Image (cartoon, rainbow, N blue to C red; front, side, top):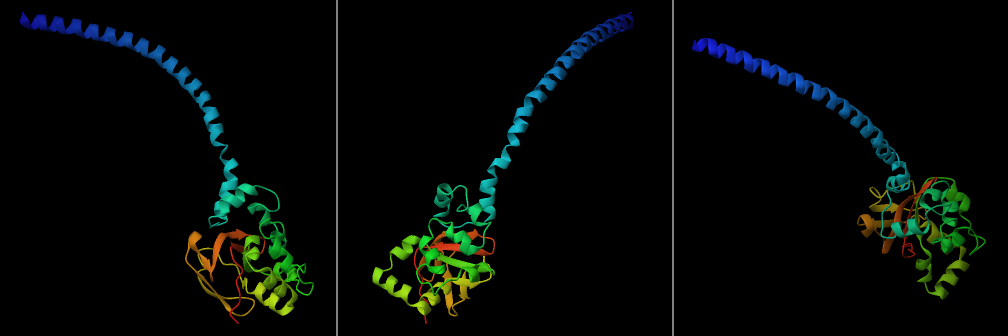
Length: 230
């Protein structure tokens, strides 16, 4: 008798369970339909997010700056003040070094010195544009720190002006990671480059912004005019 009751009870419970499952199955079917439509709308809503990610190429300017290996405290300021055009970091990369320097608003005095405008007998434009170099480029403030009488005397002395200018040029291109050490210059004597990153020194000249690529050279702008040792 007890066995019969247990059997009947189990049968009733099983039937109830089957009914509940059937009901819940119906609910799940309708719910899943809602979820599918929700997921479809969710995926459609996610499209703007995907398109937002596609805006990343707008950062290509920053990427190109990183690729240029720029180093120095003055780099970000220069990039902000010259965001585009021939004088920008990207613009300088399109021209050979003497041409690129002529478009750089911080290198106007150096440009005059190498292009024959300070001394008609000293024109290094074709030379600088014709091969690969590392150019240590004193900014205008560096020339302004040279006493006027000394600068005028230098401008009149073709041989000495040529020596000073070519002392700022190293054959071959050197990146910020490989420029430390002593390097023979086009002038013939060696320049000593010490330190690393923004603390680099070129003899006693400090780095303003370096690693700037032109079509044929790597440029390091510095805050002083260097003088050859001989």
